Structures are given as structure tokens and as C-alpha cells.
Length: 313
Image 1 (cartoon, helix red, strand yellow):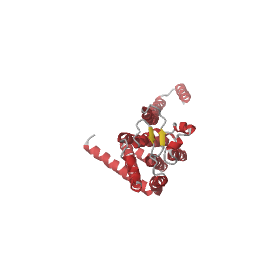
Image 2 (cartoon, helix red, strand yellow; image 1 turned 90 degrees about the horizontal axis):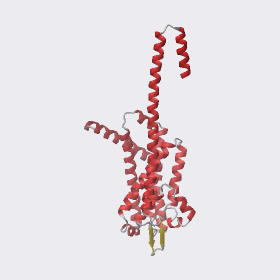
Image 3 (cartoon, helix red, strand yellow; image 1 turned 90 degrees about the vertical axis):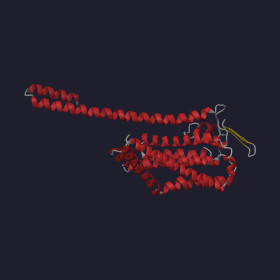
Image 4 (tube, helix red, strand yellow; image 1 turned 180 degrees about the vertical axis):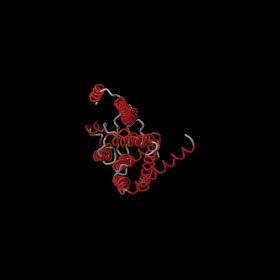
């Protein structure tokens, strides 16, 4: 890619990034639901249960789900409803530039929101610093990254496979609220997993594994079994002696969504390719048919030609 083309792509990238930023701030629900509701929920729970080691980090993950999955899904659905996506498809904007801009904006906006919520929570509840001093940084970084990627691919999956905006919104809300209430924020995670039927059911939740990695990393429990006698907490995340299973299942979840998205794209591309070829073939046959009619003076030949044409159609 030459320098001139690179500059052009960068201008397009910047333009799309600015459009997304303006769209995000113009919608009061994005600010209210994406920042204030998440922050308010975390602060309320910390005020009553500031000793819970999983509240803060679970709240960060919930805020991530809210912004990088649900609000992002609302945005691209809104664009589809206003035909903005079709307009971009008909323009000469590179698909790589378009998707890169969406990806980068999603990452930066999610990072800023989570950082703001984290800093405010730490300032108001400095007792959480005791956990931060002991956290496992590699597990935390990997878990947060995997959590964000999972949110992003789920949003793309819902947008790609479900054209009905109401259904995508409902499913997105279901994932968000189930994450908030059953994966460490709404109800204590140690209480949730004590209910066997609910614990087994949550193994089907797409966000469980990545959030468990973040939670275990925050309390520095690489074996996914956290014991704190001082506050009487004993949490077994449910992976037995197989600590690798959480990482494998988290990556498997992401891989499954990506495979579905890539397969859909390949099928659509193949369909478009076959459609283009079919159009070309029909045009060629039509031209040949017209040429044969113009050049023939034999009535019987024209009748047979017309009959063959009717049978093919």
C-alpha cells in the first residue's frame, strides 16, 4: 500500500471514528446506561458489601458487556435502520478500514468507561486496594481482553444472523442482565455457584469463562479456587483441578462465534459470486437468442428456438 493510499484510508478511518463518537454522545441513553447505571450499581453494592472481593471486578466486566456488546449492538442496528450501513457498502470505503474503525472505537470507548468506573470506585472505596496489590496481572489482562472480544463477537453474531432489531435487542438485554445478576455483581458469585442447578446452567452462558478468568486473576487464584478465612469466603469456580479448562472454554466460545461469522461471510460471497455469474450467463444467452432471431428466416427454426427458450425458463 503506497503512502497516498494509506493517507486516504486514514482519513476515512478518522471520519468514521468521529461519526461514531458523535453518535455515542448524541444518544443520552448511551451515557446514562453505559456509564451512570453501571457506576451506580457498583457503588451501591460496594457500599453494603465492600469486603466482597468480586464486586468491583465483576462490575467492570458488566460495564464492558454493556458498552462493547449491548450499546454497540444498538448502534449498528440503528445504522442499519437508517440505511447507513448500505450507504457505506455502496461507497468505495474499504471493508477493512470500516471494520477497523468500528473495532478501535469499541475498544477505546469501553476502555475509557471501565477506567473511569474503576478509578471512581477505588477513590470511594480504598479498601479494594488490598486486592489490587495481590492481583495476577497476566490473568487480569488476558481475561479482560478475552471478555471484550467475546462481547464484540456476540454483538456481530446477533447483528449478522438476526435481522429483526427487536429480537437482537431482547437477546442483548438478556445477556447483559444475566451477566449483571448471576456472574458476580447482582448476587455474590459464591452464593450463585452453591445452587447446583444454576451453576450448571451458567456453564452455557457465553460470558462466564472470560469473567471467571478476570475474577480469579483479581484475587490471584490461578487454580480457580479462592479461600479467604478472614472474610469467610471459599469459592470454587467449578473447574476442578483443570485450570486450563477456563481458558480453553473462553477461547472456544470466541472461536465458535468467529467460525459462524466467517462461514456466513463465505456463503454470502459464494452466493453473490454465483449470482453474478448467473446474470452474466443470462445476458450472454439473451444476446445469442436475439442474434439467432435476427439472423434466421426459417419459421420452423424460430419455433424450435422459442420452445427451447420457454423450457429453459
